[in-house]
Length: 273
Image 1 (cartoon, rainbow, N blue to C red):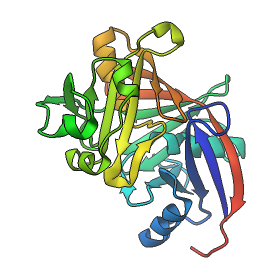
Image 2 (image 1 turned 180 degrees about the vertical axis):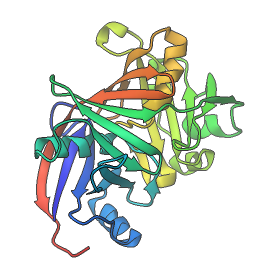
Image 3 (image 1 turned 90 degrees about the vertical axis):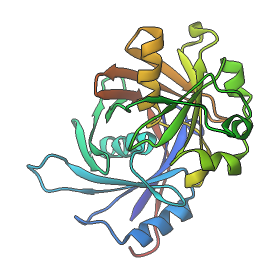
Image 4 (image 1 turned 60 degrees about the vertical axis):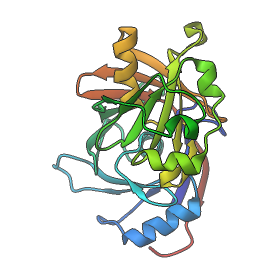
């Protein structure tokens, strides 16, 4: 079985967010324990597993995502990576519909080489700053929002871009503050640089101290910054060491995430499922 490593939300290798992608020949998934073992072996923030569905249904492929430690409800960069593999191998030529734990997700290839994901918009709920969060994060929040069922993060607004870039969290302490992780964000210092807001994502509770570029987090960042900046179409920079850009378009209950991807490794899984 072929396994690919794809860098997502980037147009060049060794940047963006790498994801493992395995396209299964059968119409069912192997045992959960086997999928988790493979994801732990790949040891990237997410490994995506997909198998084709019968024609005529509401989706074309079934899709699941695993961190090295657990399965997650929603993942943007590994969905982008899976769609990239389907299109570059000729297995898909038009929009691809994925059946996932968070519902039906669609990926559409554009003529400019980008892929656009159609994801549910996160429902934001402002809440008081939890006790101990500032110490765990290493900065004082301006505001804190819960991001809802499928994302499960705390969205933490900081005073400026420099504060986001300077973060050095206590990951063990941070793991106690959300179901999945913490997204730190601030407005761009200079939008002329090509992005409107900056973020970083920390997910120690699911085995990822810092995620390079988190597509699903942008389903919360999009409504958050659209409300503040007065525009529905924005660009976010996730300022990790690898870095990556996500173009976001708020469309009511849906958020469009646009980016590019590059396959960097194409190999063979030498074990049975």
